[in-house]
Amino acid sequence: MATDKNYLKKTLQIALPLLLGLFLCWYAFAQFSAEELTLIKEQFVKADYSFLWLSVGMGFLSHLSRGLRWQYTLASMHYFPKRYNLVLAVFIGYLLNLTIPRSGEVSRALIINRYDKVPFDKSFGTILTERAIDMCILLLFIAVVFIFQFDLVWHFLESYFTFSYMIVLLLGLGLAFLAFLYWIYRSTTSLAQKVRQLLSGIKEGICSIAYMKKKWQFIAHTLFIWLMYFLMFYVVFFSMEATKNLSLIQVLTAFVIGSFAIVFTNGGLGAYPLFIAKVLLLFGITETVGTALGWVIWIAQFLMIILFGGLSFLLLPIINRRR
Image (tube, rainbow, N blue to C red; front, side):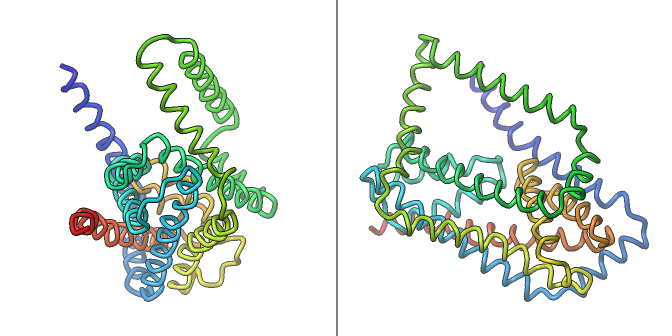
């Protein structure tokens, strides 16, 4: 019975985001007339795809840098896995995120545990540290966008979420988190004890940054990762005549809003192009052009993950078997 429940849970984890993505794909194109669909097709045909491949290359460099950066947090806890395992684990993590959202972080910790014997809870803690730092940088981008484009962004958010809805959602999540913490630290069940042990290891991983010897190298990799993230997005705008003259702050606005779309479906399927098209409407870009551009950007990122994630999946056991 338990096996059936686990199978159902895993199936829903994969199927629901995928079905939502497919629905958003249908919804995005169903709103267009036959003439508008023809215009979207023309934008795809006329696009300069050399910028797509440039975007793929920048995406590769960002993920390579993320794998190399990981070694510094692990070294602070006296774990020294092979660099190629760290890099391959990062690419595989992004590949698995296309199946179950956020499963890539868990897979990274499992891979390093298997091949380099780094305890799962500690390596997972360092991954959470990375995500916390990434969130701080994203919040910095959001702050810049709100300062320079507040009216536009607020209008965009209000068109999809009411203010009261956002407040209720945040309060609900906060109360659920507090209830979870209360249960963890008051319960005497074996499950709660295991969770406390896991959280202890995660805490050690998160605090590892305080004992890091090569902080400047870590910072340099972090800045490089986000520079590549933005540039791999930015260069695709030059692939179409209608979008190549948008200002830096306008592109940054689309970048920030597009970043939130990724969490809704597998790798942003359906949601990412839809959000990009909607935000570009604010800057006078027609929805047909915005939809085409959103899909070109998404395809560039998808190709990068499939290509290098698939190669990493194949190479990881081969390289370690030879060793």
